[in-house]
Length: 411
Image 1 (cartoon, rainbow, N blue to C red):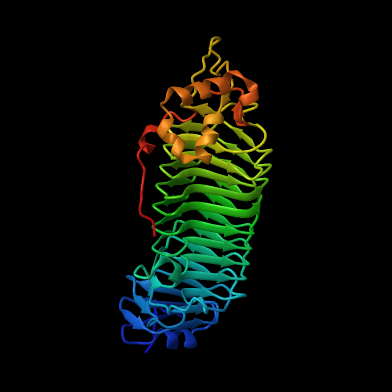
Image 2 (image 1 turned 45 degrees about the vertical axis):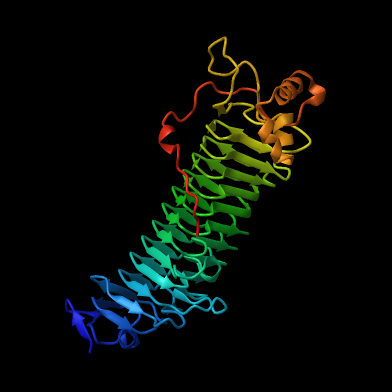
């Protein structure tokens, strides 16, 4: 049944019609099991260190029961396979590939995982690598009945890089997992591109999240680097920062979302050099999100630049101002900064948020007079986001291609 390849005793080859499970049982730790192109209808348990590699992309089908591949040993690599047809029990967390507790340093590379409940489930391991995979879920199931594309629980040092994830519940779900890298993933047509809780000291860089309900949802966390991501056309938010501290959020593009950023209970963060363009609300700021350093950002063509209701002003751009496309001040000395502070909201804005029907009267003389009075008399002034040094030109001049990136249907 098994043929050795290339004269190397540590390599076994499985031909169509033969059993991959039998090859794994016969293999020694450290061997390579090569699987030739074909369809193999079996569920696999990999309980020793080895490499399972596909030749011309063979298919392993789990028959819609349980896990298609379950990994329990350390140092297992799975490469170049099509892995499909897991069971659909959310209680048992059925997955295309389930990396079980203790299976440290597992790697899944260049695989297609399709029609599985969870694409890859990773539990209580260190230093896994999930790279360059295409993951699609049971797309005929309603969103709440699907599993997540990649789920991490209680992990350390994961590398999640270059994956394309769609038609699952949440693209990447991260819980109690630390010191990980999430880079260059594309996540679309899901509920949340990233659903992330109670995890610290991670890096999110260069990810694309689009055509979802929410892009990145980073919650109850600290010490994150959220850099150079792109979130557009999401029907709720681009990037949610909820109960987050001591983090850097920089160089991101959020465009065409209902809310670009949703910032809730966020403190002691640096939010800089982001492009926030053509959202219904550029930033929705809520729940005591004070003591953040917000500078060098571009707020362009958002219908409402900032939605902020609170009892005191928040000062942004104290050292380096932000650019506001609706700023109507001037720059007499030509230093590139406006001579008059920018205020994001006024009394009329607050009234329209509380009483949406007021929008029908925005062009009326009475409302225009109220806006003028609130600007002239501090007694009537509403607390706002205030930028004392607004920039006259955007930091990012190449913003126009991000106009019109809307999407109204999310899964």
